[in-house]
Image 1 (tube, rainbow, N blue to C red):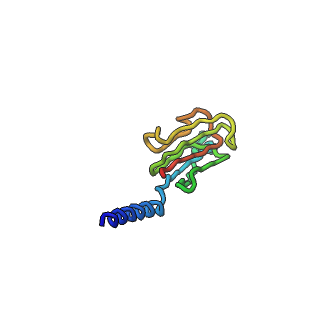
Image 2 (image 1 turned 135 degrees about the vertical axis):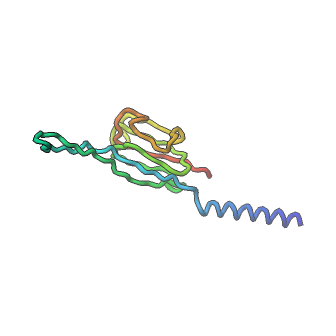
Image 3 (image 1 turned 90 degrees about the horizontal axis):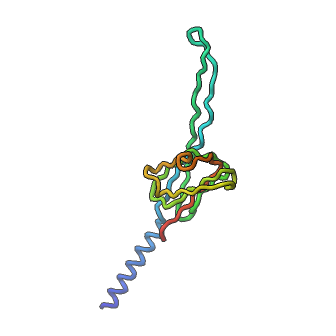
Length: 139
């Protein structure tokens, strides 16, 4: 009887492991934004005076998903403004001063961020020309 109980417990445990692995790990969701373009300015006449009006440039949002099947995300030519993440992300953001992951680099662990929103110019003063995110997931 004890052997049967042990066998049943083992089978139950294996089925739980299979169920967990079949569903995978919760992904890390990234939203990243480019550096906004320079303001667009034009000269207009107001009250008989010629004045310059400028419309600020806006960042464009992009999205990516990192999970246990694709552990990294790379942008070889991208001026990163900021990156937001959601989920349990054990990731490192690496910023590069030149395109194609060249020049000087700076690594920043997501765990250091208190707000889940990382601004490239806040953590590293050098303008970013490329970046990558590499994550680890528990087995």
